[in-house]
Length: 182
Image (cartoon, rainbow, N blue to C red; front, side, top):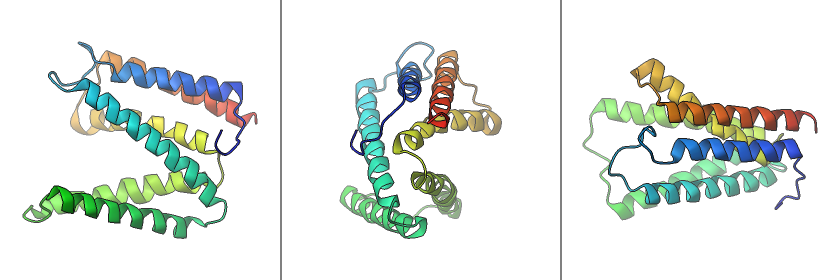
């Protein structure tokens, strides 16, 4: 509504279905995969704040990408992100030295692969697709992560995660059909 984008009924249905799938994955239960004794309310609250922040980020990004090419846009966004994270590290007094070389290599890999490839792809898409659709596609990230965890770490998802992931896939598929009909 902020960019006055009209959403089809299929896109709205897809959004609602993906939220239901995410809720099923996230609700605590014996088969949820959530660690026992965790603060579920805090985790849910932080997830909600994060989801709102990502939504706002995509809405602003969609508007900015109308006028800015990809490289200047991601340079601006990633520089701002680095500055904010530097301030957080300084204020929290988190040590940034004293770790082994393998830790620093993993940090570089985490910065390069998901950030430059994954997030830059999303920012590229914002120049051509509605923010709602780009945001919806991020619902596939946890599913991809679960598949990678299964392949690389042998971590088998519990039934609640599988069911929620299936529902998310259905929602994204419905929204994709709705987007392609526009």
